[in-house]
Amino acid sequence: MDESATVEHYKAAMLLSGVGDALGYRNQLWEFNDSGPEIQKELKKLGGLKKIKVELPNWPVSDDTVLHLATAEGLATGKGGEDLLHEVAARYVEGMKDMVGRAPGASTIRGVSQLKPGQEGGYRVKYNPHGAGCGAAMRSMCIGLRYPKPDQLQSLVAVAVETSRMTHPHPTGFLGGVASALFASYAVQRRPITTWGLGLINEACPIAKSFVQSQGYAVEETERDWSYFCDKWQWYLDLRGLSNGVGPVIWPSSYGPAERDEAYKSFSWSGWGGSSGHDAPMIALDALLGAGPDWEELMSRGAFHGGDSDSTAVIACCCWGLLYGTKGVPERNYSNLEFRDRLERSGEQLYALSH
Image (cartoon, rainbow, N blue to C red; front, top):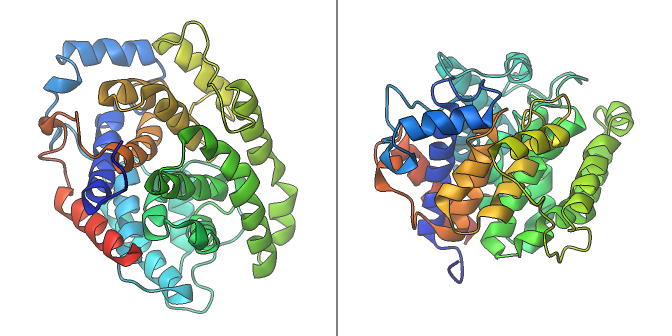
Protein backbone atom coordinates (compact mmCIF):
# COMPACT_ATOMS: atom_id res chain seq x y z
CA MET A 1 0.00 0.00 0.00
CA ASP A 2 1.36 3.44 -0.90
CA GLU A 3 2.31 5.92 1.80
CA SER A 4 -0.66 8.27 1.43
CA ALA A 5 -3.76 8.56 -0.72
CA THR A 6 -3.05 10.61 -3.85
CA VAL A 7 -5.44 12.01 -6.45
CA GLU A 8 -4.80 8.79 -8.42
CA HIS A 9 -6.07 6.75 -5.47
CA TYR A 10 -9.21 8.91 -5.33
CA LYS A 11 -9.84 8.39 -9.04
CA ALA A 12 -9.20 4.65 -8.67
CA ALA A 13 -11.62 4.49 -5.74
CA MET A 14 -14.49 6.00 -7.71
CA LEU A 15 -13.64 4.07 -10.88
CA LEU A 16 -13.23 0.67 -9.20
CA SER A 17 -16.40 1.15 -7.17
CA GLY A 18 -18.19 1.23 -10.54
CA VAL A 19 -16.23 -1.78 -11.78
CA GLY A 20 -17.14 -3.80 -8.69
CA ASP A 21 -20.75 -2.83 -9.16
CA ALA A 22 -20.85 -3.83 -12.85
CA LEU A 23 -19.07 -7.13 -12.18
CA GLY A 24 -21.12 -8.08 -9.12
CA TYR A 25 -24.30 -7.12 -10.96
CA ARG A 26 -23.61 -8.74 -14.34
CA ASN A 27 -26.71 -7.15 -15.82
CA GLN A 28 -28.94 -8.61 -13.07
CA LEU A 29 -27.67 -12.17 -13.61
CA TRP A 30 -25.32 -12.30 -10.64
CA GLU A 31 -26.89 -9.85 -8.20
CA PHE A 32 -29.93 -12.12 -7.97
CA ASN A 33 -28.06 -15.44 -8.00
CA ASP A 34 -27.94 -17.01 -4.54
CA SER A 35 -25.03 -19.38 -5.24
CA GLY A 36 -21.40 -18.24 -5.06
CA PRO A 37 -20.08 -21.57 -6.45
CA GLU A 38 -22.47 -21.21 -9.42
CA ILE A 39 -21.28 -17.64 -10.09
CA GLN A 40 -17.63 -18.73 -9.89
CA LYS A 41 -18.34 -21.55 -12.37
CA GLU A 42 -19.86 -19.05 -14.81
CA LEU A 43 -16.86 -16.76 -14.27
CA LYS A 44 -14.54 -19.62 -15.28
CA LYS A 45 -16.59 -20.19 -18.45
CA LEU A 46 -16.05 -16.52 -19.32
CA GLY A 47 -12.30 -17.14 -19.05
CA GLY A 48 -11.88 -15.68 -15.56
CA LEU A 49 -11.74 -12.09 -14.33
CA LYS A 50 -8.72 -11.18 -16.49
CA LYS A 51 -10.71 -11.88 -19.65
CA ILE A 52 -13.76 -9.77 -18.82
CA LYS A 53 -14.08 -6.54 -20.73
CA VAL A 54 -16.43 -4.47 -18.59
CA GLU A 55 -18.46 -2.39 -21.02
CA LEU A 56 -21.99 -1.89 -22.35
CA PRO A 57 -24.26 -3.59 -23.22
CA ASN A 58 -23.38 -6.70 -21.16
CA TRP A 59 -21.84 -5.05 -18.11
CA PRO A 60 -23.83 -1.93 -17.18
CA VAL A 61 -23.53 -0.41 -13.73
CA SER A 62 -26.54 -0.78 -11.43
CA ASP A 63 -28.47 1.72 -9.32
CA ASP A 64 -25.54 1.59 -6.87
CA THR A 65 -23.19 3.55 -9.14
CA VAL A 66 -25.86 5.94 -10.46
CA LEU A 67 -26.63 6.97 -6.85
CA HIS A 68 -22.99 6.90 -5.70
CA LEU A 69 -22.24 9.33 -8.53
CA ALA A 70 -25.23 11.46 -7.51
CA THR A 71 -23.81 11.68 -3.97
CA ALA A 72 -20.25 12.33 -5.17
CA GLU A 73 -21.21 15.01 -7.69
CA GLY A 74 -23.41 16.68 -5.07
CA LEU A 75 -20.46 16.78 -2.66
CA ALA A 76 -18.17 17.99 -5.43
CA THR A 77 -20.14 21.26 -5.68
CA GLY A 78 -18.44 22.24 -2.41
CA LYS A 79 -21.75 23.16 -0.77
CA GLY A 80 -22.32 22.49 2.93
CA GLY A 81 -25.12 22.37 5.49
CA GLU A 82 -28.69 22.32 4.24
CA ASP A 83 -27.63 23.56 0.78
CA LEU A 84 -25.66 20.35 0.35
CA LEU A 85 -28.60 18.19 1.47
CA HIS A 86 -30.97 19.84 -0.99
CA GLU A 87 -28.32 19.45 -3.71
CA VAL A 88 -27.90 15.72 -3.05
CA ALA A 89 -31.67 15.21 -2.79
CA ALA A 90 -32.12 16.88 -6.18
CA ARG A 91 -29.47 14.60 -7.67
CA TYR A 92 -31.18 11.50 -6.25
CA VAL A 93 -34.44 12.61 -7.86
CA GLU A 94 -32.58 13.11 -11.15
CA GLY A 95 -30.72 9.79 -10.79
CA MET A 96 -33.97 7.86 -10.47
CA LYS A 97 -34.77 8.82 -14.07
CA ASP A 98 -31.93 6.56 -15.21
CA MET A 99 -32.97 3.28 -13.59
CA VAL A 100 -34.15 1.14 -16.51
CA GLY A 101 -32.36 -2.21 -16.15
CA ARG A 102 -30.53 -1.09 -13.00
CA ALA A 103 -32.77 -2.70 -10.35
CA PRO A 104 -33.22 0.00 -7.67
CA GLY A 105 -34.53 -1.21 -4.29
CA ALA A 106 -38.01 -0.59 -2.91
CA SER A 107 -36.87 1.72 -0.06
CA THR A 108 -34.85 3.82 -2.47
CA ILE A 109 -37.78 4.21 -4.87
CA ARG A 110 -40.11 5.01 -1.98
CA GLY A 111 -37.73 7.47 -0.29
CA VAL A 112 -36.78 9.43 -3.40
CA SER A 113 -40.46 9.75 -4.41
CA GLN A 114 -41.02 11.70 -1.15
CA LEU A 115 -38.08 14.10 -1.54
CA LYS A 116 -38.88 17.75 -2.26
CA PRO A 117 -35.51 19.40 -2.82
CA GLY A 118 -35.61 23.17 -2.47
CA GLN A 119 -38.57 23.15 -0.08
CA GLU A 120 -38.00 23.61 3.64
CA GLY A 121 -37.12 20.22 5.17
CA GLY A 122 -37.62 18.70 1.71
CA TYR A 123 -34.65 16.34 2.15
CA ARG A 124 -36.46 14.51 4.97
CA VAL A 125 -38.84 11.60 4.44
CA LYS A 126 -41.27 9.77 6.72
CA TYR A 127 -39.78 7.17 9.06
CA ASN A 128 -39.86 3.78 7.32
CA PRO A 129 -39.51 0.73 9.61
CA HIS A 130 -38.50 -1.26 6.52
CA GLY A 131 -35.83 1.22 5.38
CA ALA A 132 -33.00 -0.98 6.66
CA GLY A 133 -31.60 -2.19 3.32
CA CYS A 134 -28.19 -1.53 1.78
CA GLY A 135 -29.32 1.32 -0.51
CA ALA A 136 -27.59 3.99 1.58
CA ALA A 137 -24.45 1.94 2.28
CA MET A 138 -23.80 1.38 -1.43
CA ARG A 139 -23.69 5.11 -2.32
CA SER A 140 -21.93 6.72 0.67
CA MET A 141 -18.25 5.84 0.27
CA CYS A 142 -17.57 9.17 -1.47
CA ILE A 143 -18.54 11.00 1.74
CA GLY A 144 -15.35 9.59 3.25
CA LEU A 145 -13.39 11.02 0.31
CA ARG A 146 -14.85 14.45 1.00
CA TYR A 147 -14.29 14.33 4.80
CA PRO A 148 -11.28 12.03 5.16
CA LYS A 149 -9.52 13.53 8.18
CA PRO A 150 -9.98 12.38 11.77
CA ASP A 151 -11.04 15.91 12.79
CA GLN A 152 -13.81 15.82 10.15
CA LEU A 153 -15.58 12.84 11.70
CA GLN A 154 -18.50 14.95 12.92
CA SER A 155 -19.09 16.29 9.40
CA LEU A 156 -18.70 12.85 7.84
CA VAL A 157 -21.28 11.35 10.21
CA ALA A 158 -23.74 14.23 9.85
CA VAL A 159 -23.68 14.16 6.05
CA ALA A 160 -23.80 10.34 5.94
CA VAL A 161 -26.77 10.21 8.32
CA GLU A 162 -28.78 12.91 6.54
CA THR A 163 -28.13 11.76 2.95
CA SER A 164 -28.75 8.13 3.95
CA ARG A 165 -32.02 8.96 5.71
CA MET A 166 -33.37 10.38 2.45
CA THR A 167 -34.20 6.80 1.52
CA HIS A 168 -33.24 4.66 4.52
CA PRO A 169 -34.45 6.32 7.73
CA HIS A 170 -34.16 3.09 9.76
CA PRO A 171 -30.86 3.07 11.71
CA THR A 172 -29.78 -0.28 10.22
CA GLY A 173 -30.10 1.46 6.84
CA PHE A 174 -28.52 4.83 7.55
CA LEU A 175 -25.75 3.50 9.78
CA GLY A 176 -24.76 1.43 6.74
CA GLY A 177 -24.14 4.75 5.01
CA VAL A 178 -22.06 5.89 7.97
CA ALA A 179 -20.03 2.65 7.81
CA SER A 180 -19.21 2.98 4.09
CA ALA A 181 -18.25 6.64 4.44
CA LEU A 182 -16.17 5.88 7.54
CA PHE A 183 -14.31 2.94 5.98
CA ALA A 184 -13.40 5.06 2.97
CA SER A 185 -12.04 7.80 5.28
CA TYR A 186 -10.04 5.17 7.20
CA ALA A 187 -8.60 3.92 3.89
CA VAL A 188 -7.46 7.47 3.10
CA GLN A 189 -5.96 7.72 6.60
CA ARG A 190 -4.23 4.35 6.16
CA ARG A 191 -5.70 3.06 9.41
CA PRO A 192 -5.06 -0.68 9.80
CA ILE A 193 -8.08 -2.55 8.41
CA THR A 194 -8.29 -4.60 11.62
CA THR A 195 -9.35 -1.41 13.48
CA TRP A 196 -12.13 -0.31 11.13
CA GLY A 197 -15.03 -2.20 12.69
CA LEU A 198 -14.10 -1.10 16.18
CA GLY A 199 -13.91 2.52 15.03
CA LEU A 200 -17.39 2.16 13.61
CA ILE A 201 -19.03 1.00 16.82
CA ASN A 202 -16.89 2.93 19.30
CA GLU A 203 -16.39 6.24 17.48
CA ALA A 204 -18.88 6.78 14.67
CA CYS A 205 -22.07 5.16 16.04
CA PRO A 206 -22.14 7.23 19.27
CA ILE A 207 -21.63 10.42 17.23
CA ALA A 208 -24.46 9.35 14.92
CA LYS A 209 -26.76 8.77 17.87
CA SER A 210 -26.07 12.22 19.36
CA PHE A 211 -26.53 13.77 15.94
CA VAL A 212 -29.94 12.15 15.47
CA GLN A 213 -31.00 13.42 18.90
CA SER A 214 -29.75 16.93 18.09
CA GLN A 215 -31.87 17.04 14.91
CA GLY A 216 -35.08 16.11 16.69
CA TYR A 217 -36.39 14.14 13.71
CA ALA A 218 -37.80 10.58 14.19
CA VAL A 219 -35.78 10.31 17.41
CA GLU A 220 -38.10 7.90 19.19
CA GLU A 221 -38.38 5.44 16.30
CA THR A 222 -34.66 5.63 15.64
CA GLU A 223 -33.77 4.89 19.26
CA ARG A 224 -36.27 2.02 19.38
CA ASP A 225 -34.66 0.38 16.33
CA TRP A 226 -31.05 1.36 17.11
CA SER A 227 -29.43 -1.64 18.77
CA TYR A 228 -29.50 -4.27 16.00
CA PHE A 229 -26.77 -2.63 13.89
CA CYS A 230 -24.26 -2.24 16.73
CA ASP A 231 -25.04 -5.64 18.26
CA LYS A 232 -24.53 -7.40 14.94
CA TRP A 233 -21.26 -5.58 14.34
CA GLN A 234 -20.03 -6.50 17.82
CA TRP A 235 -20.94 -10.12 17.02
CA TYR A 236 -18.91 -9.95 13.78
CA LEU A 237 -15.86 -8.46 15.52
CA ASP A 238 -16.01 -11.20 18.16
CA LEU A 239 -16.30 -13.82 15.40
CA ARG A 240 -13.19 -12.52 13.61
CA GLY A 241 -11.16 -11.88 16.76
CA LEU A 242 -11.18 -8.13 16.17
CA SER A 243 -12.92 -6.90 19.32
CA ASN A 244 -9.63 -5.39 20.47
CA GLY A 245 -8.98 -3.95 17.00
CA VAL A 246 -5.67 -5.74 16.72
CA GLY A 247 -6.29 -9.28 15.49
CA PRO A 248 -4.92 -11.60 14.23
CA VAL A 249 -8.07 -12.21 12.18
CA ILE A 250 -9.69 -15.57 12.97
CA TRP A 251 -10.74 -17.30 9.73
CA PRO A 252 -12.66 -20.58 9.40
CA SER A 253 -10.34 -23.47 8.45
CA SER A 254 -12.06 -23.70 5.08
CA TYR A 255 -13.48 -20.51 3.56
CA GLY A 256 -14.16 -21.10 -0.13
CA PRO A 257 -17.17 -19.87 -2.13
CA ALA A 258 -19.66 -22.29 -0.54
CA GLU A 259 -18.47 -21.58 3.00
CA ARG A 260 -18.49 -17.86 2.37
CA ASP A 261 -22.11 -18.02 1.17
CA GLU A 262 -23.05 -19.66 4.49
CA ALA A 263 -21.00 -17.15 6.50
CA TYR A 264 -22.54 -14.18 4.68
CA LYS A 265 -26.02 -15.59 5.34
CA SER A 266 -25.14 -15.65 9.04
CA PHE A 267 -24.09 -11.98 8.84
CA SER A 268 -27.40 -11.10 7.20
CA TRP A 269 -30.80 -9.98 8.42
CA SER A 270 -32.86 -12.43 6.37
CA GLY A 271 -30.51 -14.86 4.65
CA TRP A 272 -29.63 -12.65 1.64
CA GLY A 273 -26.03 -11.64 2.35
CA GLY A 274 -25.24 -7.97 1.79
CA SER A 275 -28.80 -6.76 1.33
CA SER A 276 -28.99 -4.74 4.58
CA GLY A 277 -27.23 -1.66 5.86
CA HIS A 278 -25.19 -3.59 8.42
CA ASP A 279 -24.01 -6.54 6.31
CA ALA A 280 -23.12 -4.91 2.97
CA PRO A 281 -20.18 -3.04 4.61
CA MET A 282 -19.50 -6.12 6.78
CA ILE A 283 -19.00 -8.40 3.78
CA ALA A 284 -16.94 -5.64 2.11
CA LEU A 285 -14.71 -5.44 5.19
CA ASP A 286 -14.46 -9.25 5.36
CA ALA A 287 -13.27 -9.23 1.73
CA LEU A 288 -10.74 -6.45 2.33
CA LEU A 289 -9.36 -8.26 5.39
CA GLY A 290 -8.99 -11.50 3.45
CA ALA A 291 -7.72 -10.22 0.11
CA GLY A 292 -4.99 -7.71 0.90
CA PRO A 293 -3.66 -6.20 -2.34
CA ASP A 294 -4.94 -9.12 -4.49
CA TRP A 295 -7.65 -7.82 -6.88
CA GLU A 296 -8.86 -11.29 -7.94
CA GLU A 297 -9.17 -12.42 -4.35
CA LEU A 298 -11.04 -9.24 -3.44
CA MET A 299 -13.55 -9.87 -6.22
CA SER A 300 -13.87 -13.55 -5.38
CA ARG A 301 -14.81 -12.67 -1.78
CA GLY A 302 -16.54 -9.34 -2.28
CA ALA A 303 -18.35 -9.65 -5.63
CA PHE A 304 -18.78 -13.26 -6.71
CA HIS A 305 -20.95 -14.60 -3.90
CA GLY A 306 -24.59 -15.49 -3.39
CA GLY A 307 -26.60 -12.48 -2.25
CA ASP A 308 -26.42 -8.76 -2.96
CA SER A 309 -23.09 -9.04 -4.73
CA ASP A 310 -22.94 -5.67 -6.47
CA SER A 311 -23.61 -3.71 -3.27
CA THR A 312 -20.86 -5.48 -1.32
CA ALA A 313 -18.46 -5.08 -4.25
CA VAL A 314 -19.10 -1.37 -4.78
CA ILE A 315 -18.06 -0.70 -1.15
CA ALA A 316 -15.10 -3.11 -1.08
CA CYS A 317 -13.69 -1.89 -4.41
CA CYS A 318 -13.93 1.77 -3.49
CA CYS A 319 -11.90 1.21 -0.32
CA TRP A 320 -9.47 -1.08 -2.16
CA GLY A 321 -8.88 1.59 -4.81
CA LEU A 322 -8.04 4.10 -2.08
CA LEU A 323 -5.49 1.67 -0.65
CA TYR A 324 -3.92 0.21 -3.78
CA GLY A 325 -4.98 2.30 -6.80
CA THR A 326 -5.50 0.27 -9.98
CA LYS A 327 -2.33 -1.76 -9.44
CA GLY A 328 -2.91 -5.35 -10.51
CA VAL A 329 -6.32 -4.63 -12.01
CA PRO A 330 -6.55 -5.81 -15.65
CA GLU A 331 -7.11 -2.74 -17.80
CA ARG A 332 -10.01 -4.37 -19.64
CA ASN A 333 -11.87 -4.53 -16.31
CA TYR A 334 -12.12 -0.73 -16.26
CA SER A 335 -11.04 0.96 -19.52
CA ASN A 336 -14.54 1.08 -21.07
CA LEU A 337 -16.64 1.20 -17.92
CA GLU A 338 -19.96 3.06 -18.23
CA PHE A 339 -19.62 6.55 -16.65
CA ARG A 340 -15.85 6.18 -16.37
CA ASP A 341 -15.20 9.89 -17.07
CA ARG A 342 -17.72 11.10 -14.51
CA LEU A 343 -16.44 8.69 -11.87
CA GLU A 344 -12.81 9.76 -12.30
CA ARG A 345 -13.71 13.44 -12.49
CA SER A 346 -15.68 13.27 -9.24
CA GLY A 347 -12.68 11.55 -7.63
CA GLU A 348 -10.45 14.45 -8.72
CA GLN A 349 -12.93 17.05 -7.48
CA LEU A 350 -13.35 15.37 -4.09
CA TYR A 351 -9.58 15.13 -3.74
CA ALA A 352 -9.23 18.86 -4.40
CA LEU A 353 -11.95 19.71 -1.88
CA SER A 354 -10.49 17.48 0.80
CA HIS A 355 -6.99 19.00 0.64
